[in-house]
Image 1: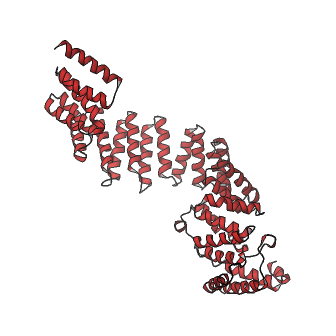
Image 2: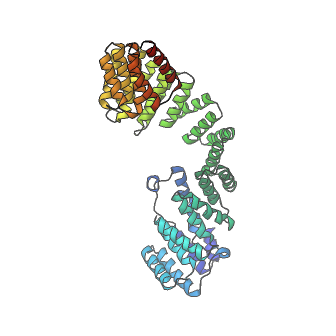
Image 3: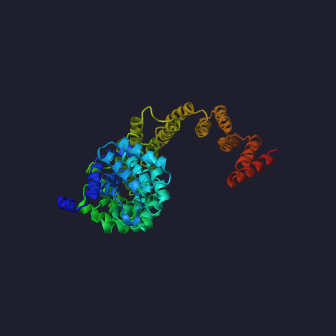
Length: 471
């Protein structure tokens, strides 16, 4: 069929089509890592539809094209001959020579130079040349389209939107333009507009999964969770191996207050070997809320092992949640795993958090205060300015009858601005226990001056009355 079509073309048009067929092979392969783009969106650039559309952009659309003079046409044919022979540097030199010679030259020259830069991954100069082209000829639809594509590739969605919208205004109603409009609107958090754009993309191209997934995400972002669940369900039937669809549906179930259905999906994704640290952490949180602490712990530990760069703070947060629920044995398992998994990698504050959890466990499981004190001393060794640990050590010394040591710890804590008020209150309470009411009063007054509290004010007034009664 194509051979027959070529026969009836004019020689110049046939030559133009053959040139564009050669050009399509010039674009270098783009990896997700090199582009910084998500694999799903990168697929758009690799798709035959996009490749054809970009190649077709070399062919003029006469109703919305800048005109060229006969001299310009001859020069452009020479440029295209260089491109067809893969003499790209020569093509660029000739284009620049003609553009330097005549600043008012047709926007077609700027556009062609931009296309070459685009294919060479020189996105900034490509965008600059496209901008010049549309400044010269504002109705230049091909230039607007390719400029919009570059802005999307660069993640500059605020500029991509007007460029792609201009394409639509000029009659460029194709699926890729609408799909990228949907992506750009989503990226600027205009999810209602994204929904409209994705619907139009699907209308024109019902086979591309990316547009349907974009629509599902727009439902999710608008908190239309039941619609997101339903659409994901339809897409999963024909794409059961797409973990991103399963995970989106699971999160939509959470949004619609159906956490156990979400848990089933997270477990299924894990069985498929496609779970992530985030999905396992969310699964663990669901189990925590259902008071299923053992399986929650298993999920928390799995989450830590899913990601080399897992944040220790997230792991410590997991342990804090478990200990707050009274799941001490499970907390111990998580802490043990944290210390193994992040050995030598914990920051000082993180080490302190782990030690404090150990201290709380020691008290909770009846190991005695001695173990708690040893842990607190380790914390103070790590950070001599940890006022909380110093106050706890002071309280322990006070309970043990070592008043001098207790006062030493309280005074050290009081020297830290953040803890001064609390340390002085604890110091005063110790003195009151020893019957030293008059000595306690200045400490309580200073504490109230720094950090006024109703309960401490009432305590201060009680101590004042007792002190007066004994004077």
